[in-house]
Length: 503
Image 1 (tube, rainbow, N blue to C red):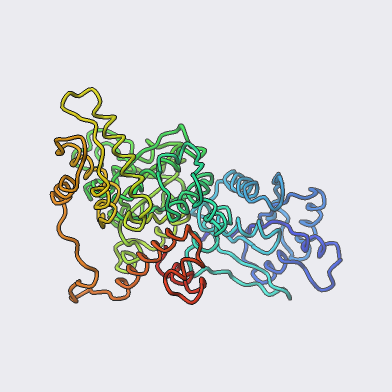
Image 2: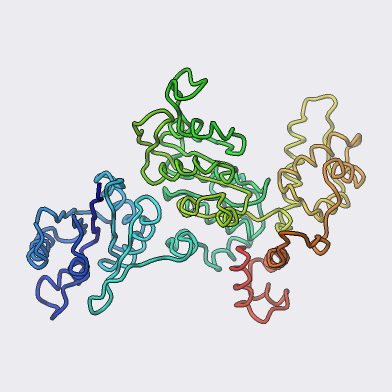
């Protein structure tokens, strides 16, 4: 069955002027798009202007193009301001949802040209998130062009409220942090973490998927919980699923549910995690471990806002926000065919990249002090537990350690040291013993064997990432000062490095 094609657009000022004969030879962006492509089955128009003026425009458009007026729909959208991103996003999303979009049988095209720049930005965001759509624009002279994006939407096109300016990062890095309670558990002095916290705070208020990238133990789940608590879904279910711990043949059942008799052992109907998280947030940890067939179902759930239990043909509508996380290099997995590219872009609307602890030198001491207070508090009232402190020399060993297991490893190392130390002070030998129990000697970056799969570019990027992170930490986020510390000619060179290594 062929799909119905819809052209969706705001009615802009140029469109009205064209209909009112004020633009000689120019029919306006919407009419130009319809003249260029006569194959649209429905013209879906939004307005925040005078309704009767827009009705007259629709009548003029139908006459000009030779359209059946019944194929043109006009909807009033109440906006606090035509340049208010939040108001536009909520108004358009609510309107399209009332039209039961997205639908499998409908191909959407959003027209970027009519309306304000803020309206165009929201079309871009919606086309890559809740309402998958083709994008077009009308250039001067009436030339209609398809708009395609070669890069990640989260990196280039999310509105400014999802990004942090250098000035804001500098402000965050100086003095004590005033964090809302939802993010107060994310302890940091590092400008790198402050940047990610600010991004998380902003993306939390917008109901889009989030992908959190970072090594094991960097605090991905802590960020996911904070995003949920700071969102409009706070107080609703928050369900955590470790995708790496699910048996591959049960992944579809775990996430989407199953009907009785769907497979051997399915002796009753079972709700999946999507249904359990109704109205709330579903945190999919280690998303990169999902099998490909489950990735297909997950993509469908994100696009259509519905899931179909295993053994059923009847889809179930869902209202769930997905926050996903992984320690894997998902782009490498995409290139290798282990992870679907379309699912990656669907998840990566809001991207957070959590730095490893070794690049957060200013945070290690803060975390040591915090964890020791926590360990001492938990030991209160136990006759065998003594209140422990740590010597300066022992603390220096921890600060200079590479921490391949990141924050989680630091915490458990301190727990072991506190338990094994017979006295009141954790010393150098106590720390070394605690580290040696779990860690092999650190491998020098320049001693890695050149074998099959050796990647020199990746190794050099790792070195750059490490020292750029240290320089930004030392300079308090001042990129000009950091460039001088690194011996670079200018902060523009440093910016290029930061973009390359995704810092």
